[in-house]
Length: 69
Image (cartoon, rainbow, N blue to C red; front, side, top):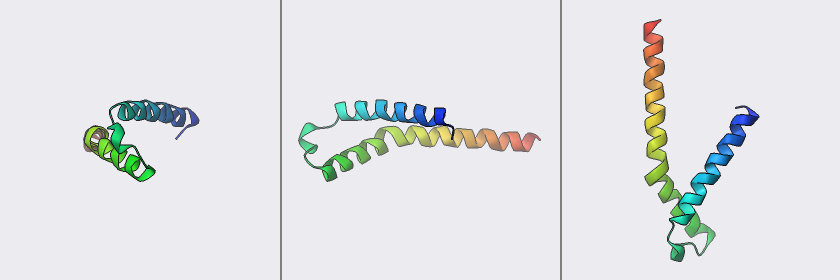
């Protein structure tokens, strides 16, 4: 991963974190453990499905490229 890609990843992660924080129930943000649990649940519900779909599509495209060669 290039330094530029790392920086872009950090910027996007910060943007995602801001959105998740804005939508987190304040009463559940009382300890580090609870924050971790809330964020993990939000990531699993909102972020990871999109990442999974993207990676699946990329994998299928790669397989098609290999099969066409």
